[in-house]
Image (cartoon, rainbow, N blue to C red; front, side, top):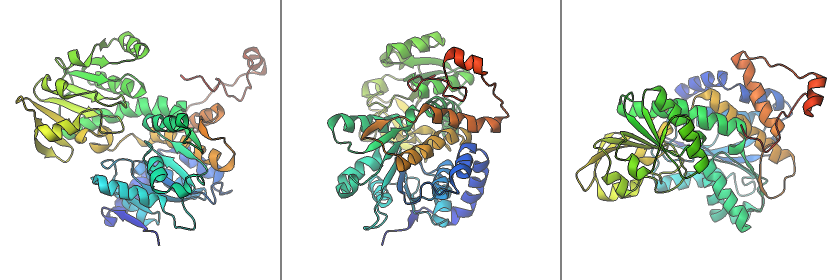
Length: 428
């Protein structure tokens, strides 16, 4: 019989439930979907393995899936990103949950395998992923069910890179929906979510004053843009590093200094990696930084700051569970947050509920699309009209009203007056 849950402390469930109740009020998109699809039980028969950071917002997402008729088994996509009260509340509500903050790598892998196992006769038939971990481990450990999975919805750029690689190699025999490229995900969660949660994580871990310092942001995609805005709003002077000439030009036109990491390390007091790539801050950079520079990563994995080098070559003093003081071989000291993992979740509570409602409404719509319709193998986007629907169901909560096109106006620009208002390929 499948294990039903493993969390840090089931006694935290009451606290978690109270916090979930508050979050529901801030997540109008998910409440809208419960009202729209709940009565018809649109996801009845779906057995969804969910691999996401187990937060209060994820709890509202998972309970929305169950309200639509799905069965869910949940694990975390990151060993350090779980909120123990959220996991406890879900476990106490009867949702199989396998997550706690501070999992070892072995425990992390075990938790993911538990999300797969609904029982031998009724294995997982849908995947909701964040970073591609559940997808990858399913392919390795349960190849017998891989072809039976009806679809995958993927949250992040990291996971999309993995899916695209599988698709190019011919190994992706099932359909997947790229949630990250929905406008109401990438231009909201990535931008505005990071704008609020990055500095929250830095300050909780260090109590540092940001005003007047030089902050280096590596990567100027939507995440990097939000990080740079946040740091500048607190009075930091911003340096951006980039490899993409278009993003670099955008950063320059925002008034930021743009240079190489080799040059930026000579000036920076705070470093934020936001690239989704490896080896952004390396041994050479570390050895040339200012004393007591603060390093953090807001990308998905712990590969942007060379934490492996630090562990193997530095004397490490743990300041608190989220902050390490690391003395380098040359005697210099740097401060590393969250052991190089996603700083807004390891050191704080992640993005606010409202912006996660836009992301997670896309996730539920992607699951409904894949479960109720036939998609060809490969990586797809949600239809543009649904992206606009996600935006619409959040406007009322903000007290916002829209103009409407007249029939003459709609005819003039050759669109349906009810939308979509931009073509599928258009990104704001």
